[in-house]
Image 1 (spheres, rainbow, N blue to C red):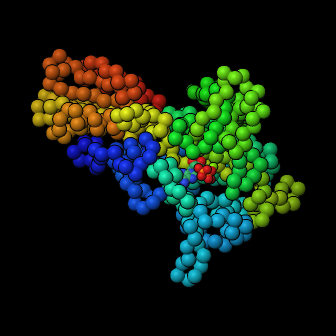
Image 2 (cartoon, rainbow, N blue to C red):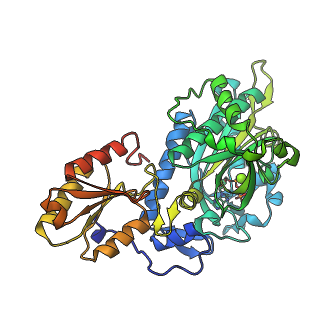
Image 3 (cartoon, rainbow, N blue to C red):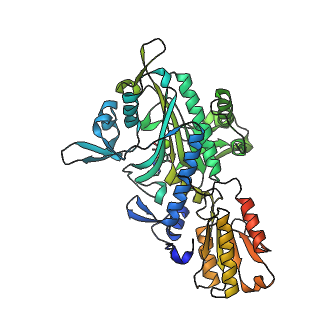
Length: 451
Ligand code: ATP
Ligand code: MG
């Protein structure tokens, strides 16, 4: 993309309404614009990051054997009356009446709708296990929408639902989700710690939230610092293996990690003192096992091996895709702007032409642009006729992890400058070597979303 043809409405001033870094930076970097309280338009740069996150979520869900689909945003109130949640959900649910006077709602989550689909089409235990998921906009009429996309009213969420014959099968689904979530966050360059949590309006016995540590997080968290050393890394996981999934879950749930809702002072104090940590965290996902809470009242049964109908065991699993954009920025920025991890960056590298209109500099930039594009990378070329200082400031603000600076002086010696946004370190090297280095850096990353 050439900046002269893009739409990147960066702001010079710091917007006064934004209280935390990610919100300020998303507004300043021209990623979002508020449409009305808690509802945002995703401008091109923000939309690109959102799509990258969505793609990672899809890839890891499909890898775990879960099946993608799409349910609508608007639902009928009738299903929610069946589960008993129409009255329970309260003021957070946006209720709408259609022209025929029928009660509708903008879905805050989809347990009822998916259970209705399941009971209409699945009749035998032989069709299990089954996990269906979608990534769709949700609406919750939050009392205090704030912090930009972190606590919006309309937000983009992956929600998945498992259907299993027995509790043991459903617990395998729970473990599989935990492992696939750990991988998902790692690919986004994030550490999200699974913490035992409270089940809230979804209900159920077993639940973990995934929290990204950040001072601006809304949850208070307590944990054993040993958990921050854990990494899945390159481990290849067989999601069908119960033992393998369970081992990974045991590894991650053995060190103490809880939110204030389930915090246990005595257990916390049993951790060696130098490993005890309390801080704040951003909830970026949650998994639940809730057994037959929905299948029983809604009649979602299958014919079991003995021919008798049994209600299925279910769980639901959510990732806050739009909130993650903010959470990643909270975890990765400095006073100049955002610092995107390679796995989610909207463009792989910026090209800054120090002397636009200089025929050699222009030609060198065009050649770099063409070689990077040929490798499947997406460069953002600042081809505007602007001061170098302004170009650098824009690149730093929007946070591309790598910048190639091209100027007549370097070109005389046959070199360009490659700069890391994270460390600020630069090296001079021939243009082909810079391209080669970027190719190596991005090897193993999915470059363009398939979805
Ligand atoms: P919270 O406690 O932050 O209100 P929740 O526990 O009610 O969230 P879940 O039902 O667990 O939310 O939804 C799954 C995920 O969706 C959450 O982990 C979070 O990342 C995201 N999410 C929930 N509410 C919002 C919101 N208002 N804005 C943006 N993302 C949200
Ligand atoms: Mg939650």
